[in-house]
Each structure stands twice: as structure tokens, then as C-alpha cells.
Amino acid sequence: MTRTDLFLRRFWQVALAIPLVFPSFIGAAAFNRTLSKGGSLADFLENFGLHSGFQFRGFWGAWFVLTLFTYPYVYLPVAAKLRHLPVSLEESARVLGNSPLATFRNICLPQLLPSIISGTLLVTLYTISDFGVVQLVRYDTLARAIATNHLAQPAVALAISLILLVLAALVVSGERMLRSKTTAPETKHSPRAVQYPLGRFRFIANFFVWVIGLLAVVAPLAALSQWALGGIIRATSPKSSLTIDFEKILSASWGSIWTSVIAAFISVAVVLPIAFLAGRHRSKIGTIGQIIILSTFAMPGLLIALSVRFWTLRSELAYEWLGDSSALLIFAFVVRFGSLALGVCLVAVIAVPKQLHEAAVTLGASQRRRFRKIDLPIMAPSLLAGSGLVLLSVLKELPISLLVSPLGFTNLTSRIFMSFEDAFVAEAGIMAVVLVSISFALTWFLVLSNAEHR
Image (cartoon, rainbow, N blue to C red; front, side, top):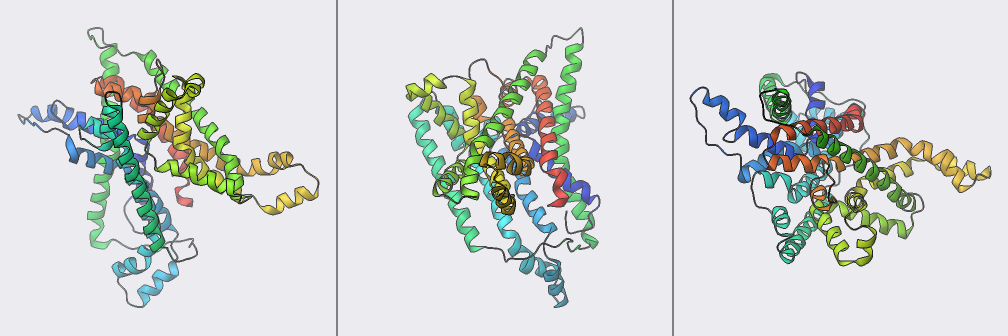
């Protein structure tokens, strides 16, 4: 994608990141309903007398979907690093007689390992905590067992939650150990990257990329569009008994928008003081707060949802203030995704030049005035980007939406999931198209539009 003469290379650089906009359970539903018996593919094959009893279920179904919709977490940081690897080291290796494969193994790979390990950590944490995919493909995991038992057998759900939490801690600890042993050599970024001609492997490389693009982007979009358009056409037909409740779709869309926007801005407002304490003042309180907030990133959303639920049930004060309310839902989102905002806020705080503050102090400007006139204008783009990351994550979050939402409240993720479970694919398809469109717009603004500049 970044180092070869692949056909339509720039197009694929963007297209292969698009699976990031799909909540994984929507991808699972698309493949499940399309490939399983009674799906559109099975119906198409029956026109030719071919009958398929295939069921998109179990381990391989979960593995296929999670692999297909989480690989951008590894692809994006690795591709960004590849674009700026120093040219001089690779050219020197080639002059000394190293083959392209040996050059990659000895020069490029050591510099890519930190990005690979970080991306793999994200994929692993996402996979072990995923509930929507394994529920739709009917594959038993710790996350599914917790969701199944949290009402009937809360003690069992708590025990399994502890196991999942320990597993997440082991994964994070393993990542830290690997990172400490694979520190990349310090090198300057290069404005240009070495390009390798594919030669006789050009056809194979293009074929592989097209297969990934068709499976990860075209197939789910086609399935969702078919359900949405088919449902609208049938619902508007006077002879059809199918009805689509567009009022509920609008209500779910509005629920997703306002909760995600509020959660995004509250997350930034909460973590910004911690970022100042840790990034500018280097205080112990800021460091401790930073560690606590970042540690929530390793906690699966399912555990956070159950924790805040049990907390409000056990604490009279918490139940009185939050109870079964939208405030509790937003609080759970802030706990879950505050770490995303903190990382961006830390970068924003550190990026403010100290010389400007020193000059402002010399001129007698108060701390509040310095923040308003110096810090805020410089940090604003980064703070908006951090808010956008939280907003995008909240839009796609399923376990918290299902378990913490108050009675009478619906958002797109919970409504889509329940519609798929109840086989209302037309309604689910329309809402999924809305959710994916919003997610794509945010992903384009936050990630893809700046991909070439990373």
C-alpha cells in the first residue's frame, strides 16, 4: 500500500481503512444473513438448483468477522510508520547486497515492531471483550457468558468478569514486556519512502487487495443497502404488509447523536485538567490520574456496564443521583472512552510553546487569561479531534448501550442489534446505513483525510 507500485494504491490506502467505520456486530449480521440458509446468497444459488445448508456460526464465523473488521487497528499505524521510514538505511542495505526481503527483515521490521505490537494490543482487547459478534454467530466466550448470566446468576457473571479482567491485564502486561524488548532505533522521519516494484507479483498483490476490499467493504455495504432499499420499497407498496417505524428510527438516531456529543465533550472537560497536571506541571496527582484513566482502556465495555449497574444498585447515593437515567449512560461512556480523549489532550498540552506563557506572564496576564488567549486557540484542533474520537467510539459501543440505557431510551447500536436478533432486517438495514454513514464522516475527518500527512 505504501511502498510498492500497486495499481490504484492511493485509493486502496483509504478504502482498506473503511472497515473501521463498521461496528463489528453489523458486519457479523451482514455475513450471517447473507451466507446462512435463507440468506440472499442461498436464495440466489437455489435459482440454479443448488441447495446450501451452510450456517455462518461458531468459532470460524466469529474469527472471520473479527479479523475482517479489526485489522485497520494494525494497518493504520503500520502504514503511517512505513511512509516515513528513513530512506538512507534501506538504500545502504541494498548497496551492500541485501535482497528486498532481507532489507525488510533487518531494517524495516525492527522499526515497525512497536506499531505492530500496539495495534495487536488493540485488536486483542477488542476481541476478548466483544459481545455483539459472538452473540450473533452463537459462539460462547467469556463476554457472552457474562451477558447471559448477569441477571439470572449475578455471582457467576461476577466470577467470569474477574477472569476476563485478569485476562485483559495479562494482555496489557504482555504488550508492555514485548514493547520493552523491541524498542525501535531512534531514526529521523524521511519525507519520501523507498518504492519497490512488484514485478511478477503484481497480479497476486492486486488480487489479494481486491479480495480484502470486496469482503470488508463492498459485501457488508451491499447487504445493508439491499435490506434498507428492499424494506423501503416493500413498505411503500400498497399490497405489502411490511411496515417500518421511521419515527423509532429517528428517535434512535437522535438518541445516538445527543448522548455521543455530550459524552465526547464531557470526556474532554474531565481529562483536560489531568492532562495539564501530568503534561505541563508533572505533578504526582496528574501522573496517578493519568494511570487510572488510561487503565480503563484495558477494561472491556461489558465489565464497565455491569460495574456501574451494580454500583447504582448497591449505593443509595448513586441510585438517587444517577439511578436509571441518561446521566448514568453518559457516565459509563466517559469512563469507557475517557482514555481516548486523555491521549489527545496530553499531546495538545505539550504542544503549547512555553515561550508564549513566559511572555504572557512577563506582560502580567492572569492564568485564566493565558488559558483563554494562548492555550485554548492552540489546543482547539486537537481537543476537537479527541472529542471526535470519543464520539465515534460511543456511536459504535454496544454492551454499554444495551445494559446501561434507561427505560424508554434507544440509540442506533442497541436498536440495530435487537432488530437483527428479531430478524427485522429491513429496519436494521436502514439504521445500520445511517450509523455507518455517520461513522464514515467522522472517520474521514479524523483519520483518512490526513492519512498522507502522518
